Picture 1 (tube, one colour):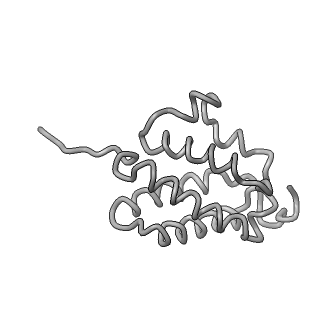
Picture 2 (cartoon, helix red, strand yellow; picture 1 turned 90 degrees about the horizontal axis):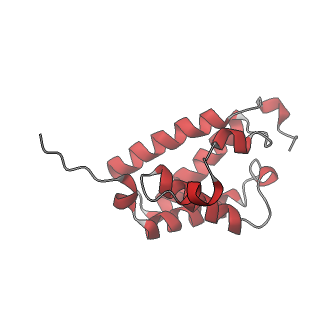
Length: 132
């Protein structure tokens, strides 16, 4: 059996991933539910997210090489991630995907994976929204 399989990172490409994440974080920086859990300067956050998403999508292990195993839930435990914040994160990502013209099957599968990840990161109920 011969299958043509494209690695998601190769399908998206480094330039489009960077464009997507910059569009995403421009929304995060303005979102009232997300601002409290992100630094004022998102430069390093964007850089690390590009590294992580590169690896997450099957590209080079940039994140692991520089920072060790992702352990994303553990790395985010000190932030109060509520269901509402997870949803806001996903909404920012969907809007960023629209902005950069990401569509079709790739977008659908990628967004489903991100949705699973966002829900996995939830560590607090919505009533703790004011805590950081």
